[in-house]
Length: 102
Image (tube, rainbow, N blue to C red):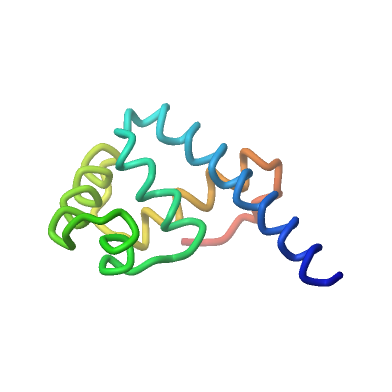
């Protein structure tokens, strides 16, 4: 029974992530592949190698996609990308964001 609930919750979570990242991707003019990379980052926190394996592309291509995403967003680090994706997810799901001093 616990497995079924966990799988249901994971499915619901995955849908929320996909929807919020698709909205983020549309707003920032990301390509389909860039959106896929962003979704996989948010859902699973994959490394570049894991992203490459999952998407059946090279690690170099993954790095190119990440670079393109970051250029479109005007950022220079993957950490900032994660932060932006998380903020988008929280906003789309109406989760409160606390004010944290930078």
